[in-house]
Length: 84
Image (cartoon, rainbow, N blue to C red; front, side):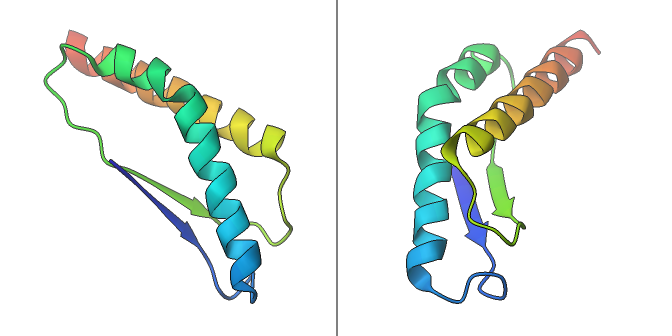
């Protein structure tokens, strides 16, 4: 389960906030299999929240690279949790 938050302070128009949310959702959808494969058969539950704090409209490749980096860090934490 995951949540997305985009500040109304930085993006006054709902169109801009919704576009950022769509981009984050798509990047998550394309890369979630890495995270679910790592968490499979592990005694953990994952609740993710993505909060966009930038002030400019991002490109998809930037969002996707940040999502991948976040997933790599989570996978590392899941694997370390298993060994402790």
